[in-house]
Image (cartoon, rainbow, N blue to C red; front, side):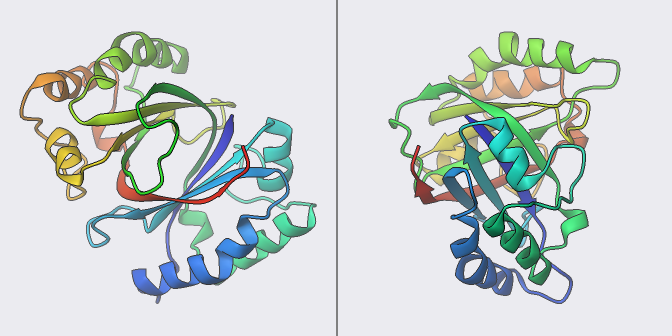
Length: 238
């Protein structure tokens, strides 16, 4: 399935709580009905004061054409949709989002591990927006990530679901991929992957430590935004 992940940044002058109130009360009823959307997740930060973003909006589509028609292509952070509800949603984001500061990625989701039957509502999620090391091509990065790192990461202690997202248009994508690790217990997430106060962390041992050491082989850690939050299911017709 194809997904559009928007890393949301509030406008100047808004508090995080004002942003969340507008997003969920005013914008969500529009966005969930955007033409072609079959699933919609929101992720709210567990530590807003330390989070790099105010939230994540994840919209899923059955086809890439449906996604592009509604939300544009990876070549631009902005877009001009032609469909009615998509256009209404695009107009409304001007009321609460700093659009030019809002990174996004369009990609295909690959489920690497699932012990919850796809039910992620209420789970805690660590989303790492991956940037490859200098000197690597995107293809070399993906090959190392999927072949070498993923078998380690899926066995990190406490992980109940693990998705990887690979951009559909790498040449125009802002990131080389997204790693989504789900936990039922926030303390287990923090122990394995650190808190939102830092992009880096020092895992205590086991597979978490092995995974942390391995990322030095392919990731530009300092350039890799990450987000820790609790996922909410808004819509699922998939």
